[in-house]
Length: 114
Image 1 (tube, rainbow, N blue to C red):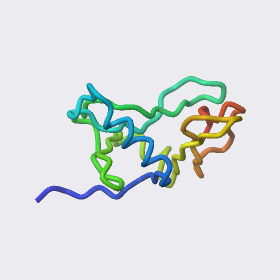
Image 2 (cartoon, rainbow, N blue to C red):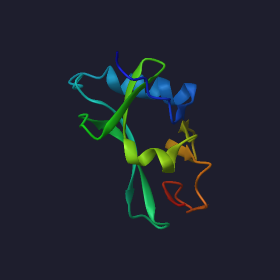
Image 3 (spheres, one colour):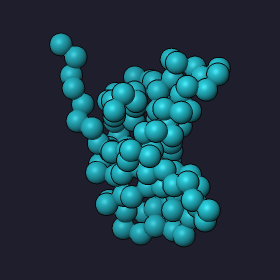
Image 4 (cartoon, helix red, strand yellow):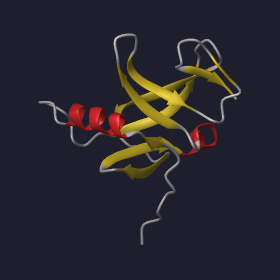
């Protein structure tokens, strides 16, 4: 029996719609999954990672509304409870991150400290 991983993050309806739109584009590699994670760098110390990637043995696997997702197991402590949204307005366009674990964020909204 495969272990079920608790879903560490959530996607808003607009984020799910945009991700599914990207997955329907010609030439999309269906072996890739949506990677949600962090990496060192950015104005505040850590930067969010959101993109399609191949799974590795370090990843936990979960699904959000039909979107197959992966996250390095070690990143869960930084991202548990985070919500990813898609903004499509005149002033801002792109994915945004609402992370309750961040002690501070920067003005760009893609970097944070814990």
